[in-house]
Image 1: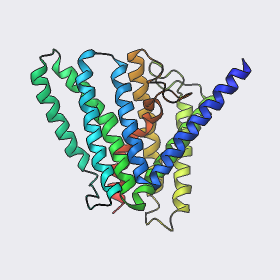
Image 2 (image 1 turned 90 degrees about the vertical axis):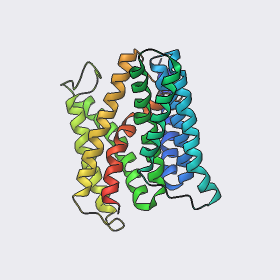
Image 3 (image 1 turned 180 degrees about the vertical axis):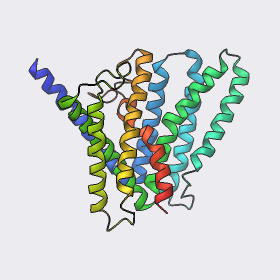
Image 4 (image 1 turned 90 degrees about the horizontal axis):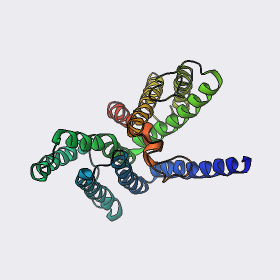
Length: 282
């Protein structure tokens, strides 16, 4: 029994280390991030539509995967060919959202299926929850050292927040946060994660102050922003899985589950961080 637990721990640690290494590598090499986010998006979409299986959603899934291939090809080719097609504005994904929305509306006209609003809502939620955040991550890795720094800082703070929240919950946890969604999450653990994440953001920000021209108040705000939205992102995915009656979104990452299980906090945090960077990184 002990040997089995040790083996599972080793597998979990190894797969987590590979994931973290690829994410960090992607910050410094945008083409790596582009390929990584393309793969994560496709797998994430497959996991999402498997949560509540519906044969009518096959069209929606395939359309989104096709759009994913087209968009990431557009992002990758200029990096490979060294052409002048880049940079792409961080606002560009919302133009792509308009195209995807129009495509779904046209498709629904001809599919003759019931509950049109249900299918449209489910598909567009996949776009907003999975596709757009991963595209924004890719674009942030492309737009200079300042954006890349805040992107890397977001990753580090989210991972620290998860670790400290778990540690705080294990040591001090008594009051359940939202038990119907996440029985193990406590207010004590969450507050420990928030506090330590803000402290870590301040320390890292002050150490990097010589290279990044940001006001001192930026760092605690950034830490609080990341910690709060990372927690909400984790709760959102827990809610979706609980309603679907599943434990993990997939099994592609041994010991961790699926891509959505590993990326849930990052996906939800990317929007406010991207907006933050648009304000700060000028």
